[in-house]
Image (tube, rainbow, N blue to C red; front, side):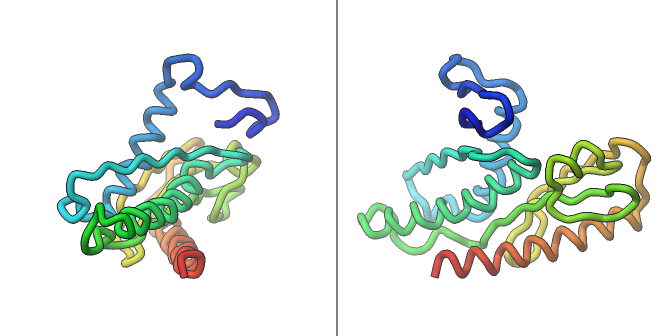
Length: 173
């Protein structure tokens, strides 16, 4: 989190020399999500480092980071191809992520902070552009949820990811 991304000023953890468990977990989630979009053999001996900075935190930051990081991934691979570092196309699918939850008994997409802290159920869903699930993280914060409610949330998330995928295509055009 960059300073001023939240109401109180936060120092970057890298300056402190140690990352929290939460930061490490989010970093691993973003990495897993992006690797699902890449043919690692086609990438060859190259490594890509993507730094996700949250400029304004208001819930759903890890899902926004994944969706934006995919754009950076495609851009960096295009650069590497232009430099002759990569041949072919290592991108095998797109990646987008959304938050969904149950707030006041109602399924909601893209939870902002007020929804997130009051949600009975909170879930992050990461999907490929072809509609496959990469990761689903869901928790009943209050009342437990049943399979029907889970299906509603997954359907809502799938539509949200589909909408984000269309925006990614437009941004990359």
